[in-house]
Each structure stands twice: as structure tokens, then as C-alpha cells.
Length: 333
Ligand code: PMV
Image (cartoon, rainbow, N blue to C red):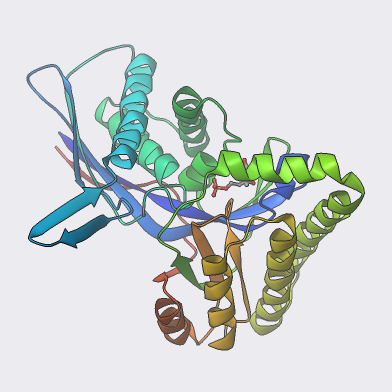
């Protein structure tokens, strides 16, 4: 038997960083997927084949007559620990151990803040649990995905595996989640090609907060209110155009506030401004900042915005919101 499952990437639409201070955030699944194929093998081992996972890439340098290749295998190795823990947890759940081979292909760049680790964990849990004949629902899979993150990285809010398993829009506050109706946002994600450390950026904001709470606290409060406003807009019965305009404005404000917290970089802001000039209704950092990704809301202008992002030095990914989370793509008997 062979099972192919896929799980989507996520973006934080609104509320990164302020969420660390107990404010709400809204995240969404996007249509970039990680595919995991699982089958039993005869040798009793866990075998993981990472066929095509998008690590930050290859750097080539030349000197005189030498060519040097560098690649970030560290990041790829990290992905594999999520897969391994995911397989182990499913086997514990099934109460039996068997040899399993999984092979992974992914459209989600690793280390870009798009939730590639959670997607690989969720797709693995989905494929392997089906292989073992377990009937887990999406919230059980999200919980196992969260467990995998806790085992591998020590701390996690659980937002990434939940969005990846359940799909759509998720409103999150202090550990509880609520699915919101999905607004089909035509977006472009722009990857700067470098990644910031979430841990360091969270620490930087904390330091500023402790040194000057009277200045940082109102920014965090504004961010919290902005997320509430975005939730209202998402739930309202407005026309699509009005929703896009309002959400775009909120994105721009959210970007400004994140910049004020000190988590933007020149390349992120370059991509944000290039997108707006190319016609995006809004553009902001998504995730921790310091590198990683931004996203732009660009109805009718996705290809213009993608070109502008490319010219500004980023890697554009034209994508849409994914209503679906974990998907079983194929089961071969
Ligand atoms: O780096 P990402 O995309 O997982 O986003 C981190 C979001 C933060 O709010 C900065 C941190 C957190 O734990 O919520």
C-alpha cells in the first residue's frame, strides 16, 4: 500500500509579534504544498528520501580556476527531524512499529517563515497514519503536528501545524483557535532569500519593550486592535472590492507598526514598496521579519507585482489562500 498526502504552507496575515504579548493574530493556509508519499518497506527501518525540498539554495563562488559550491544542508537536516518525530508519534499512536519509507517533495522554501516544518510534519502524519489504518481527524492531526514541533524545537504556539492541517483562515489568541470564513485573497508572496531568526527577533522586540514600555506598549495595543478590525472585515458582508481595500489598508498599517518594532529590513521594505508601486492594495512582512517573506494583496495585478518583486531582488510566489489543509491525494492498494 502507498499513500500520498499533502499539506499547505501558511502566512501570518496580521498580528505577528503582538501575538507573543497575548494579542490575537490571523493566519492563513496558502497554496504552496509539501507532498509526502509513505509506504511500508521490508527492511524494518525508517527511510526518508528528501527528493526536492526547497532549501535556501546554492551559492557558487569562483576564484581563479576554482569553483566553490555551498548549500545549506543544515536546514534540510532540520526538516528530516520533523519527519522522523512525526513517523514515531504515529507508530506510538498505532501501537506498532514497521519499516516505513517516506519520500518528500515540497514547493515551500525552507526557513522562509512559511511554515515548511509544520507542513512536512502534518503531511507525514497524514500519510503514515493512513498507511497504518488510523482514522485521525484534522484536529487530532494538528495536535500531533504541534507535538512534533514541541519535540523538535522545544517551544511552539501550535499555529503553524493547526493552519496546515485545517486550512483556511485561523484566528488565534492565547492558545485557542477559531476558523474564520475564507476570503479568496489574490496574493503574491515575496521571499527575500535570507531568513531571520524568530527567536532573536522576538528577543529584540522584548528588549525594546522592557526598555521603553510606554512607547512599545501602545504599538502592540494598536496591532491587537488592528487584528480585531481585520476579523470584523473578514466576517462582514461587504463586497469583495471593499474587503480588499480595507484589508490592504490594514496590511500597510501593520507593516508600519512592525517596522516601528524594528523587525523589518531594507530588502523586506524594498519588496513591500515595490509591490505597492506596482498596484498592490497592501503589502507587509509576514512572520518574524529580519529577512524571510512579505506578502502583497494584488487583485488583478498579481503578475505586475510578481515582476516588481523580482526586479527589487526578491523571489515572487503567486499563490492563493488554500481552503483545504491536509489532503490525501492518492491511496494505492
Ligand atoms: O517565523 P514565523 O513565520 O513562524 O513567525 C513568527 C511569529 C512571531 O509572532 C514573531 C513569533 C511567535 O511565536 O508567534
